[in-house]
Length: 142
Image (cartoon, rainbow, N blue to C red; front, side, top):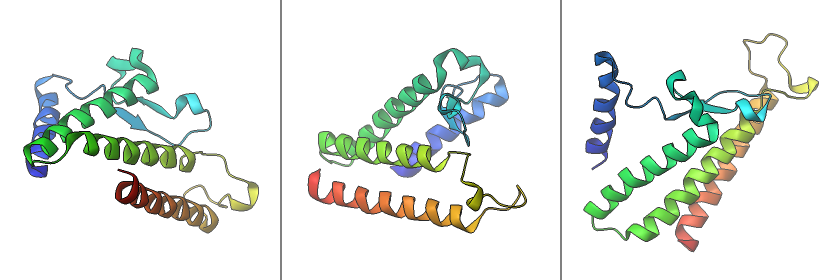
């Protein structure tokens, strides 16, 4: 099922070679210093959506595609949708916090091309915490 969904997304991406922007509305992420600039649609043609709109459409498209996959596999779709929503929300919240491009002077690298150890450790711990929280939620709440 995962291969079929992945091939479907790949096929949509291939349409760009024919001049069709089928995935331009998908949210893209970047390092940010202004929270309003953290998210944006992948294509400038969909700029009117804004970051929040692109994120909402991305969530809904993934929820629909993956829920259909869960249904095809005989899973409880409501339970899957709740767990997926929790994982999606936690992942984007962690990315948002970890993507903040401003760090205290003690954690800034002397050369911009280097990642400071403190910043890497903070990001690693953030993602580990999110992973543990996600596993807990999926196993015990959903």
